[in-house]
Image 1 (tube, rainbow, N blue to C red):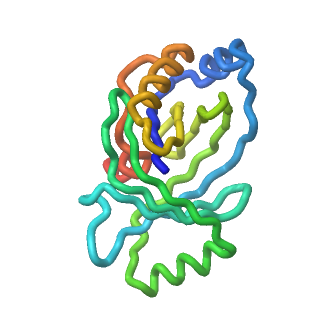
Image 2: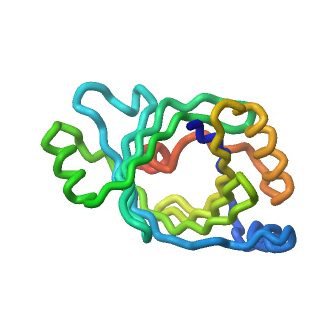
Length: 175
C-alpha cells in the first residue's frame, strides 16, 4: 500500500476547521499519539530514508515500517506496513535486544476528518506547532492522488509550500 500525503504548517487551525465545517466534513475522532522511532543496527534509517515506529494511541499499539519517500508533484509517497501488536513494551524490549536503538519520540494530538478515501488531520505536535496533513492510501495511482491532494489543500485555504520532511526529521533537526 502506498501512502500519498502532503503536509502544511498552519498558524491558525481554527480556519481550517471552519472550512472543513463549511464543506460539511466533520471530525470523526481526536486522539493522542506517542510515537517511538527506532534505528536499525545494520543500517542508518536516517540515510536510507526509512522509518520504524511503535505508535501508542487511544486505540492500542501499532508497529509501522515506512519505506523511502518519493516526491509526487506537491506530495510525497512511501510504502507503509502496519501491524497491531498486543504489547508495545514487549515489542520495544525485543527491538532493543536485537540491537535497534531509540532514535526519538514524537507526541501529538491529532484530529481526523474523513472525506471519502481522503483523510485530513489537524496535528498539534509537541515542540513543532500545528500542521494539516492530507493523505490518500492507494495501490498504484500516486499521481492522481497527489493531484487530488493539491485540490483539497486549495479548498481548505492551505497556502505555502508543502513540507516534505517528517515530524521525526523536523524534531531531529532542532537538536
